[in-house]
Length: 234
Ligand SMILES: NC(=O)C1=CN([C@@H]2O[C@H](COP(=O)(O)OP(=O)(O)OC[C@H]3O[C@@H](n4cnc5c(N)ncnc54)[C@H](OP(=O)(O)O)[C@@H]3O)[C@@H](O)[C@H]2O)C=CC1
Ligand SMILES: O=C(O)C1=N[C@H](C(=O)O)C[C@H](O)C1
Figure (cartoon, rainbow, N blue to C red):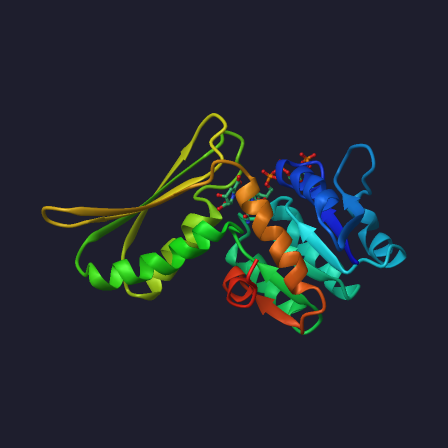
C-alpha cells in the first residue's frame, strides 16, 4: 500500500485527489495538510505528521509561497514527492531542485494531464518545421487562479526559447475555465494552432495518480511527467 499525504487538501485539486485516492487500489491517504478545515493538519506540523504516519509520497497542490518549505520538509523526512504547484520563482524552483534531488525522488510538473505533456512535444516539432513563423501562446483559466501566465504556458515558452524562438504570451482569467492552452504559429497565408483544453480537473488527477504510483520507491532525483509517461502503460 502506498501511503500518501496531500498538501493543499482543501483546495480544488487537493479535494479531488483525496476523493480519487479512495477509489484507487494500492494507495491510501494517511495525512492531509491545509491552513484551515476539518480533518487536516497545519503545515507547521508537517515534519512530525509525515514521520508519525509513515508517509511514502507527499502530493503538493498549494501556493507558490508554500511549496518550497513543504518540499524541503518532505525531503528531509525521506518522503518522495509529486509537485503540481505553479507560480514559483526560478530561484524557488532551483532551490527546491537542488535541496531535494539527492534525498528523494520527485515528479515536478506544471501540468499533469497527458494531453499537455504531448502538446509540449508537438510544439517543438512545429517550431522546427515552421521556421520564421510568429509564435504566441494564449492561455485561459478561472478567475481565481493566482499566477499568470500559467506554469504550462511558461514551460511551453521555455521549450521554444531554448530553440531560439521568440514567443508572445497572453493570459486570460475568467469564470470557471479549467485550463486552455493554444500555441499559435502565424505565417504568411496560413496559421497553425495547437490547442489543449482541460474539460475537468480529472485530466490532472489522472496524471497525479500515475505519478504517485511511479515515484513510489523510485531512486532519488528530479523527474518530469515525460519520465512517468515513458515507463508506464496506464
Ligand atoms: N500541475 C498541474 O497539473 C496543476 C497545477 N495546479 C496548480 O496547483 C496549485 C493549486 O491549485 P488549486 O487547487 O486550484 O488551488 P486552491 O487555491 O483551490 O488550493 C490550494 C490550497 O492550498 C492551501 N494552502 C495554502 N498554503 C498552504 C500550505 N502552506 N500548506 C498546505 N496548504 C496550503 C490553500 O489554503 P487557503 O485557501 O486557506 O489559502 C488552499 O486550500 C496552483 O499553483 C495551480 O496552479 C492546478 C491544477 C493542475
Ligand atoms: O491553476 C490551475 O487551475 C492550473 N494550473 C496549471 C498551470 O498553471 O499551468 C495547470 C492547469 O492549466 C490548471
